[in-house]
Image 1 (tube, one colour):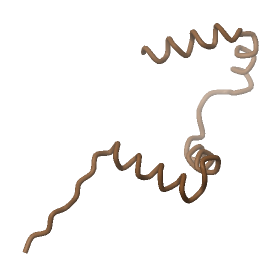
Image 2 (image 1 turned 45 degrees about the horizontal axis):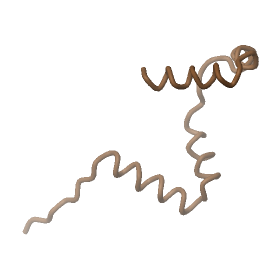
Image 3 (image 1 turned 60 degrees about the vertical axis):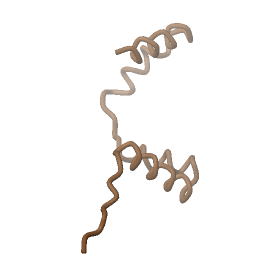
Image 4 (image 1 turned 30 degrees about the horizontal axis):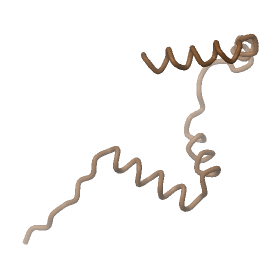
Length: 69
């Protein structure tokens, strides 16, 4: 007797996981939970000075440029 195994794509698994977290925790706590796994990198204090001098237009252009990479 053989049974069929349902194999999902990684994108489907991610969506199901996000949906389950959002249902159980709500969107804000879900985001906080997910952020707890990424400690980030760099030195926020030093990098922050560069961000404060940028205009909104410069920030938007940088976002657009990074999305194209």
